[in-house]
Length: 354
Image (cartoon, rainbow, N blue to C red; front, side, top):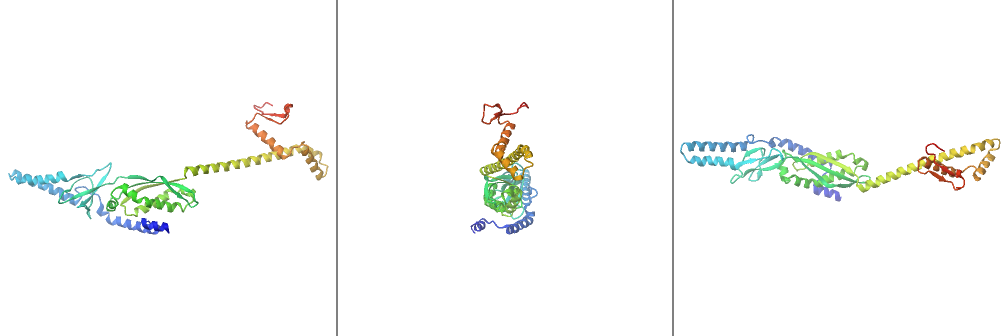
């Protein structure tokens, strides 16, 4: 309930309503596209009339002056003043600018987007000028080092979101209402971006989130373009990763699991080798007991093990471990206890000499 109330306050809707609003936005762009084409000074009817009027006044003033009608100086000067004080430049690059024509501060309903060098009437009583709009791409990253969200399997994920956008020249009125500045627009859409990512991430397992950055980016793009912000989204990049502390702990857990598996496999190998060694040691005695009943054979073997003529499995396992240490070069000799007898020392066979 709390989340739904927050959604309503932020104007964030579910997928169906977002799709409807996106369709409405596309229709709005389609119907206003002809009115929002970027025009130069000669292409725009308003600036063309101003230029022609200024040139006409200059021409009339010149003719009157040559006819010794000194009022021509005033008329020609008025035309020249229009050119001089009305000259307005919109940067063609770095940054690329367009202008939204305004009359007394209100955008014109038609032919309102202009570019390049134009002649306007930015003074009283006309106040016919432009609001300059930087339409070059602007990049931003949300959440600094990223937002942290819980996935469906309750694993926290760090989501880094970077967006490249620019003002939509077909919807500059909404862009002006949103602040006419990309930084201001980005501050307004932050909550929408946060909410869209949260919805997608909590529906996915953590292992899936890492590979779904593109799909999350598409949902963010749809939600933003459906809003009344007057921007055109060029790129949305979403990168998901585990927090460093959790990633380290998961790596440690995997390492421990691998070590346990390796130790289990190592123990199994040693145990099998010990059984083989015990069978080989007992074989010569089993042959001599071959004519005896089975129960007697088993009893005699057990007696040999008690007398340590044949070692029990623990003894052979110990022997296998000693041999493994020598083979791996981790020891040069293993003392069996009786140092008076040279045979009680198993010396590592290094280089093939015994």
